[in-house]
Length: 212
Image 1 (cartoon, rainbow, N blue to C red):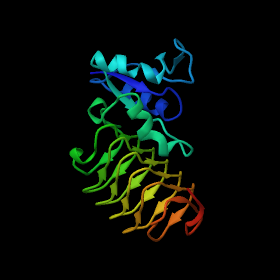
Image 2: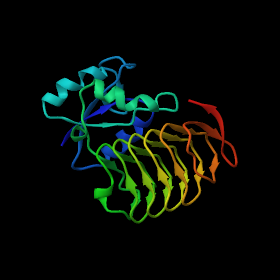
Image 3: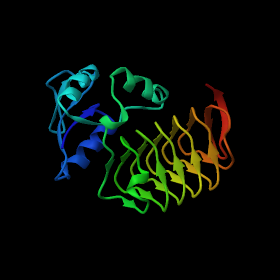
């Protein structure tokens, strides 16, 4: 299967390394608005800007993407829709170096599972969500669409994380906690109770520090 990566920096580099180990998936190159066309990163060439994705879609290519940061994660859905890309245009990418106990059907299209991740029994991962390196997700946890979980996080069992949530590196989410949509959790935070209001949370225990 021939693939195009949306993005050539940041998390995209982890995508490149995973795909280099794959025998079934062929990454042709990447699209990025900030990188000059023709420039090569990790052996892959920039083929143009994000808006060029529609042309590759017409040619039958599928896509992977790690775009999104603590500053842009809330806009991810709108950006991808502006490129006329739908759920069936993306594949899920799971590192062979991760431990996956859940049914693969519970991991939706476009999701990225990086190296050394643990996904427990009956974990569910939504559309275009990213689980970064070294993160543990306990049994029956649910992470909905357009979420980004930073490296080395611990998400305990029976946690529910709604859509458009960014969890900073090294954070811990206590078991049976629910986090509403449109929330940013600062690096190293410990979430011990439900978060029901959108905003930025940080600290131990995590507290609201800014509304969105």
